[in-house]
Length: 201
Ligand code: IMP
Image 1 (spheres, rainbow, N blue to C red):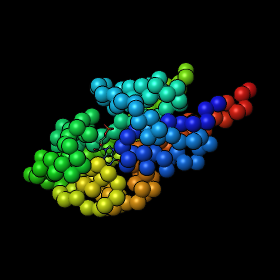
Image 2: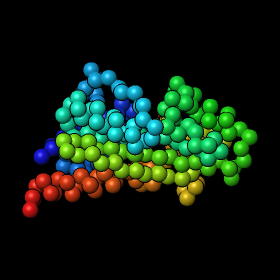
Image 3: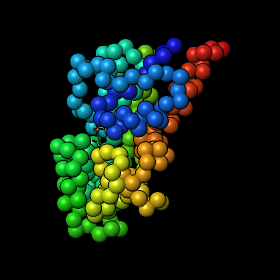
Image 4: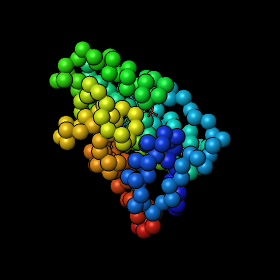
């Protein structure tokens, strides 16, 4: 029975959110800090699902551990779905990525600033490959607000709360976010898997 789960991300913001989302599982959550020698693999897939699976398979093969990885991004309707799969490569820092996004949307009126965050989480172990998807719809603000979270959180408004993701606490964000939605499904799957391993019938 696996006692450990590798969370294969080097993104601090993602790690904190995923750790909280999976905290009540009877598994020790291991970070990539424990494997500093392992390289990152290029995200060469053409979908979030492919990239999540590529990462999870790679780190599972390297460590032998049950592994979860995720790929996520922001799709802005007025930009034809950009930055999408290339969200992390849209600029060199979060500030640069946000500045570029706001510049590209400069002349776009509020009602056309709709966007969604997408997340696909992949779970890979011996004889196991599963993916879980989540998304959340919102709108891109004209200026950043809030200091929590990471990435595009300061400009992504969640309309039902009238706040950006960076104005929410981590658990408020996870209750509605793309990552929260994907990882709650993954958690349910793991709970059943662990139960089945404990009581095979
Ligand atoms: P990747 O999954 O490592 O390719 O990177 C995803 C990128 O999408 C991040 O670097 C952020 O720019 C953006 N992103 C994904 N999820 C979130 C989120 O929850 N908040 C803000 N930005 C996000």
